[in-house]
Length: 421
Image 1 (cartoon, one colour):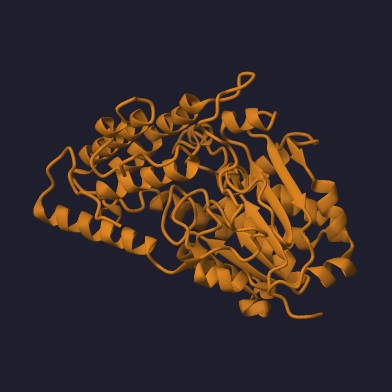
Image 2 (cartoon, rainbow, N blue to C red; image 1 turned 30 degrees about the vertical axis):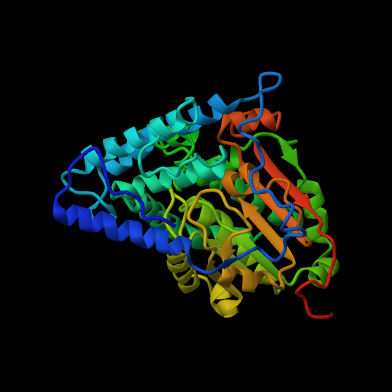
């Protein structure tokens, strides 16, 4: 893979050039680390990560290529705002506002390149030529590359840390409340609703980012978690397999027989990871399951990273007797991913090894469960839980913005990667 050009529309000093160069090298080195296909995929050759064909002609008012490009264009304001005030650790500094504008200009050129006939002339020098396929994976990847080219590393770090800290303070009381629920069906339904409420906090989607402006609104934040749980749309939801999932869960003997290990792909920091995913994982562990929490290797938007999730899990264990008692049965792994969406043909070796004997996969969030992997075929049971925060996705799923998706699919029972019962 060729080195990315360090040319920018501003002229950084030598120290800045060195810093940007090191970060770009680190990012590119991560791309060359050993990886593998997720072992629960039934057919790696047939697997297509992206759910929607962004270049397909629109039908009946469905979004076309220009609409999907617009999704990325209008989301830039939040990135520029965060980059302009990034800390030194995350690529900030006195020239951060100028570099944030340079990032914006470059990524707008990328998007323009997908719309113009002379794509090579429109795209910035560092952009691959010819242009990669127009899909959500590549658009996310090129946006991350544009940030790194202009010296930014983790522009959402501060808001992630703040939300994680607040969520960790709220977690013990939430767990005590959940433990008081005696009806296991009601209890699990509350946990799934918690996953949906937590997934509202997504600064990569314009609709939810606008609702979460510092000092303007707490919608989707930790503070509004319980309120959001109560305000979820009435069922039936956009995709609603809740009853089928709860039926499987409540047949405890069959569940224990078929479910011994889960891989849970975690999405956003704050309420999503701490008040949604951790209580859900804890409940799986109460059925004596091993639970592997898979989180991003590198920062992307406000998605929680593996290192951040590990820190919150340590904090949770300090304040919860059950989590302390199970030790490493609930653990975090680096998924190998660096985007808010995920290609299951390219995960870390650590995750691939952990998933060899997994019999439940949980995909959380719009990026991992809807925009990618909505129809992926696995040889084990799979639960997808997400809120829809792009109106284009809502249209294709024949629902409304902020609709809920709970999709439960049963896998083909096999002995692939499993020891005999």
